[in-house]
Image 1 (cartoon, one colour):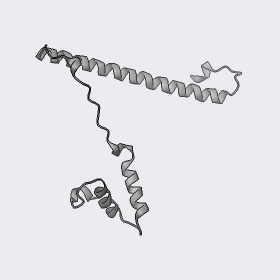
Image 2 (cartoon, helix red, strand yellow):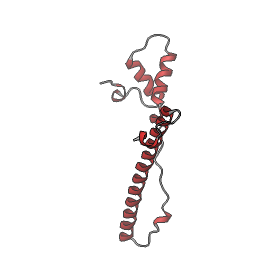
Image 3 (tube, one colour):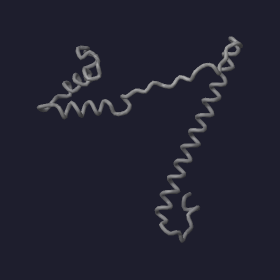
Image 4 (cartoon, one colour):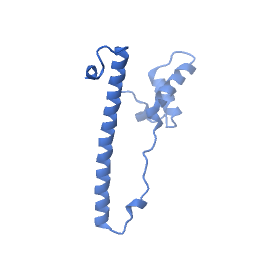
Length: 119
């Protein structure tokens, strides 16, 4: 596919090939996101219609959007905590000890066996 848009005698064909591939990838992501957005908008319209069936007086435009809560665990928090535990350890440390310290640093009860049991 990228070879079709790059002239045969182009300078730096490898760079052009890589740029064309990257552009195609980003364009695909945009198209995928637009399709997802269209589907979400359709779902929202359906929910608005059902709200209108149950109570036509409700102003759905007055309903404020609710953003998903940010969870720091997904941003490498656990990895950072484990690395800090390993860095601060004065001697070699077992996986169980790492787990107990991790649970404590996250603010949970380290005496809870379900939290500190490694399968």
